[in-house]
Length: 278
Image 1: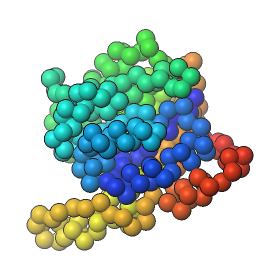
Image 2: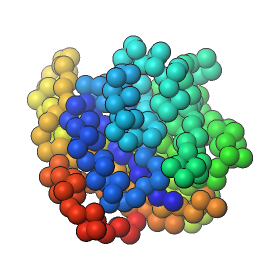
Image 3: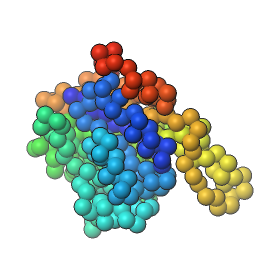
């Protein structure tokens, strides 16, 4: 089984990369399930029903999120009725939505997706380490393949979660910092790990936003209006290969494609799209 996880989609530039390139990536890597972090998909902050439904139509199977999930007010109603849009499971009890979803591949196999959020330099919500174990136990009888999106700021907290869940889940994929890291590996007990999957959007930017207003915030500490950057659009992601009988990851590879490279993939003959070893 192959799982494709797409890094944080940033505004219209990120959505355009999904529209233009996701089908080519599916042809290239043959994923059985596509997961994408969509919490920045609406102008860089939050997600709307229209945008979420569109991402699902384009081939995303499950959308994860993080601290920006509530930035668009309509997300509160949308997440309550759309189980394929997750918010961190460690938000306090009574918050709309859910943090776990069991998806089905095209051939009917189950894949669990769990979304949790870190607390270091972020919101002081419920303990992600305790909550993720609870969520794993809740779906363990349905599937051995479980992917965790750990939306966190601190590298140390992400690495800690990777080791904590080694052998308990198929993969721990970090999101939130928008900078793809180069530490992908399969841990000793069979869990694929990557500290941060990166972002899908304009990379000539400051973590996805136009440089000038972002830089001004550092220079003068005054409020600035952030807009998603358009320069050098790239799609970041990771492909995890797993044994669906055991839930253990067998291989992992991060990917990063420019808009031009995605176009070339899309126009290549299908018999020329050799399956990449991951």
